Length: 91
Image (tube, rainbow, N blue to C red; front, side, top):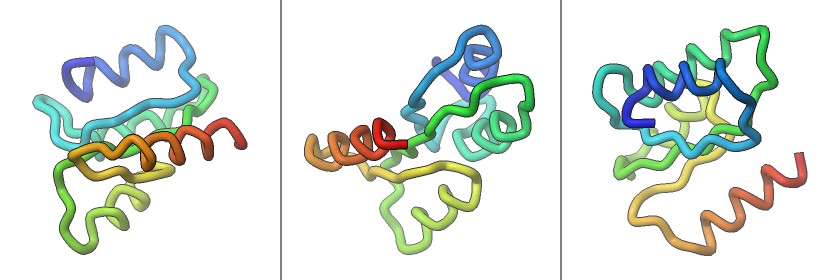
């Protein structure tokens, strides 16, 4: 999806196991998109992994508070992405 609105619309059309959610997107950011997705009751809730260039203290906690399950900062490290996806598989 190109923005948070499209992400929300996509999840309403078809189920996803995992969403790699960019925190900074136009029109609706990833935090608001995650809040909106978590409020949807007629969908199977996906595991949402924050993917962001924000690597400041407190950013992880902000993403988790928004309803995301995990957090990976950019630049993406393959080992971190692999571990986050393995966590999703175990749930």
